Length: 69
Image 1 (cartoon, rainbow, N blue to C red):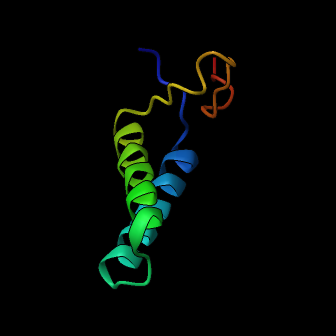
Image 2: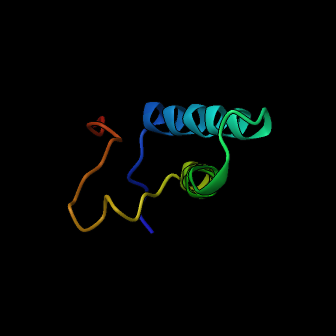
């Protein structure tokens, strides 16, 4: 798959996933919301690690920026 996520996008997703994890671990986030946001956090970590967002592909979105020649 072609990478379509830039560095800032990846960093923001990791930070958001860590915030969600901390909220779940400290008990501030519980129940269905914790499960749902925990799944989102896991997806954020996965997509950040491979630099590919499947939802960007059909819309031809890329946060990589302009390629330098």
